[in-house]
Length: 121
Length: 107
Image (cartoon, rainbow over all chains, first blue to last red; front, side, top):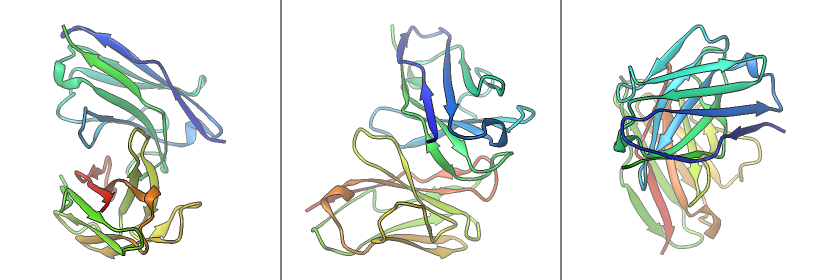
């Protein structure tokens, strides 16, 4: 059974930093690209970041470029999102999602349960 | 970048009705469209990919059609458990783009 288990929710002050994690099981983690997708309160799905199967290629939404960093540890079947210079508008439920392709550019067949990030003073 | 639009943003229908949910791409994306269902308080679930291929385990009342720029998700007979927001996604190039969603509820 494929599972993507994410770290727990957290509150942080504006300007702060945070690291999200997502641990995968039930599939060969290093055969697939992975994504972070977020959903603000009452909002739709917003793609945040992509990392290829081997970590050699990464992409970011303009809204987070220069502030967020995606990485993965294939030995630990883990995906990470390092978030810095956080803003109130980054408040959202963050999902990790599995791509069907090595390099990304596919659809997402499995999603994590979500991690709530609240940025507020 | 490809933009995906979905209109209406919400619709209401009766149980048993045939429901169609449109999605439009800003440029030709061939058949590279996926549809996701997100029930209230739940995570998104893949329904359809390649515009018309039903994901394993998805009820056959769901179907997808279209190519190029215009796509449709159809629910042949709306059930109470289909209350959800439905998102289309383009994936002809990384990273893909989500539409804003159409919320479906029961009249």
